[in-house]
Every structure is written in C-alpha cells, then in structure tokens.
Length: 234
Image (cartoon, rainbow, N blue to C red; front, side, top):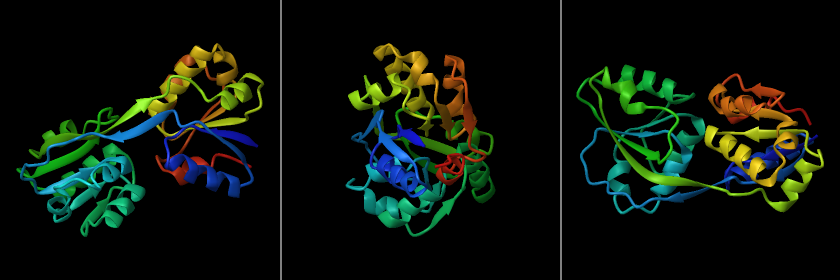
C-alpha cells in the first residue's frame, strides 16, 4: 500500500517510519511548516495548558522557561505530555484526548479563580478559554507558534497523485486537510487528489475533505496517532 503523509516535520518522518514498519510505502509532503513566534510571558499563572506538542517545542529556548517549568502543566494528549516532561515540566497531567477532554479534566482539577496560561498556535481548533469560562477559570492565551501553509505539492507527490499511484492520504489536522485541497486545486488535479482513501484524525479534520467531494474517508475512533494508523493496512 502506498500512502502520503502530510503532517509537518519532524512528526511526518516519525509517522512515516511507523507506516513503513507496517509494510506501507510512504511519500512525504509536509503541507505546513511550523515556526516559533516571539511571545511575552511575563504574567502570573497557576498552571500551563498545552494543546499541541508544537507549543512545547516553541518555548524550549524561551527566557521565561524556568518560571514556566515550576508550574503544573495540563496537556491535551500523551505525546504532548511526554514532550512537556522531556522539556522539564515535573507535574504534568494528560487529558488523553482532544481540547474538549482537556476542558473536562481541567474543570475537575481546578477551582474557580485559577489563572491558566494557554500556550497556543495562531490557528486553533478548540476554544479552551470559552470552555473554562463557565467554571470561572481565567485563561490567557498566548500564541507561541504559527503554521505556514505550503502553496504547492512537491513535484513527486503531484506526479504520484496525478497518475493515481497513491492508495491513501493521512490527515492530522483540519488546516492540513484544507491545504491539501488548495494544493490540489492549484495543480489542477482535484479529482485525482480526492480519489485515494483519506484517513483523518477526527471528524473535524474530515469535514473539508467531505465538502470537497472525497469519496472514501475513514476517521479514527479517537484523536490519537495510534488510532489513525490502525485504520491503515500495509
């Protein structure tokens, strides 16, 4: 089975290695490039919220890192939690899910009046501040990274899609799925690009592909890489 992985590096290559272990032939097209954003982190907070491993990477060299590491951290899932521990956070709680799961966990653990620093990207799928507002938990969202979309497919990927040589495409975010559709339109191969099986991390990720007319979409039962890879057969 020949599949395309569209997620940014370094995660794309890590996912590709797992797929190769399952017997897949893998092509890579990182449709987003993640880059840090200069951020001011001078406030006073009780906890840190992390909704992406990219946020952890973005603060690795920040001058206020030592101050942040002293705070408890709430992570959206296991990979983000692992990255936070590796960076130096000692007290880390993982919601093992998506932004909604993180809201539920934080409501359970925190009291009203708690001040939360949400380290986030420019484009966010969930509304952590809105989700916690009803519990009187104050969230300050600070953008620490951005994802820059590609304007075109790499030539080898364009050729493979045009020739119908790819069996499946893996999509890990709604933004990546939208960028995939845009790149296909730019290349004039929308029909060919929508023809493979599209494996999506969540229903939200799948929505733009369904709207564009993708014929076969398979969605992971939970928003985790392992669940998505279990859909793919080598």
